[in-house]
Length: 409
Image 1: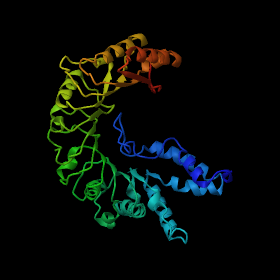
Image 2 (image 1 turned 30 degrees about the vertical axis):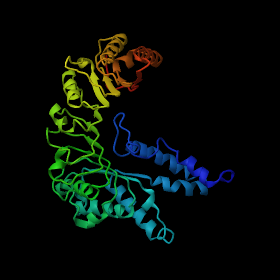
Image 3 (image 1 turned 135 degrees about the vertical axis):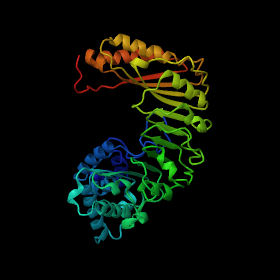
Image 4 (image 1 turned 120 degrees about the horizontal axis):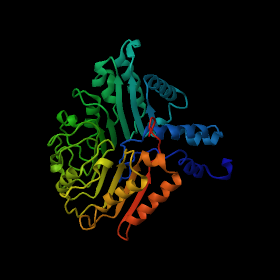
């Protein structure tokens, strides 16, 4: 089979095997829509399943696909960490692996997402985490993206994750571009703070639980252009532009006051509120006033707050608007819901937003899904998008086809 084409050609073909390329959604500098800093685990797992199957086709496919299997590694348990560390140890001590590069150059994204609710069966839970972790990190030295979310229930020190023990400091990858952590730092020895310190000159995007990392970390992250804060509300003045002088793209999940954005008024080009937070018209108007240079905005609206404040003023630079529209109402018809959505979108007029060229809407309407066929929904969505579009404005509307468990009329 492989004899009909050169191996180089088969390599290029098989690189596309799987759901999506294993890379950070921010690899190409994208800031349209919500983006994870590292590849989602479901993408890594889907690609792994496909590529493992391809290794069974023939020896040539096995040799081609083997490096792709290690491209993104997602570790979800302590047992998986120990198994992988053993595989890597065996690989690099074998006669063939000792001289090879293997995962040292193959692995580009490494994510630890471990939650062990009952670690009492381990004599030393901290060592149980750090020993396999340090071994894995020692082997995978060409990582671009790193995720750290390790939770050991009855071992408080593991939440702090000090990394001075077990030679963890020397194992932390250098040259990272993408990093995420899901814990507020407990001390300066906290693993994520050491990752930030050792990669301050190379990181491009970081995702953190909250803004508390700034209180224990003072070295500027010179190249970071993307910041995602997934946890509690950032306090006004908590993050200073001096720490993130290149910041251009921000994602927040909670309800920050407009004053939080004031220090970044001449910096931010894109702002996204994640799906957990519904922004109201009054606050949207105030935020847009604070950020006059904003080019991309992502917001979430629902039926009870499909309104725009009269305080919404002239926003000359906004080019792209991403809307996630929710409606959990049970008494309104599909016609009324789509009518209200259209009325909302029309409020972003050319008078207020002269540069607006693209509006992308994701509709999550369970009542519509329950009462209409997919064909009727597709027709309604297409008709609405066409009625809202113009020569200078492209409107795209997608519908979320997902039935919620327990939904009842």
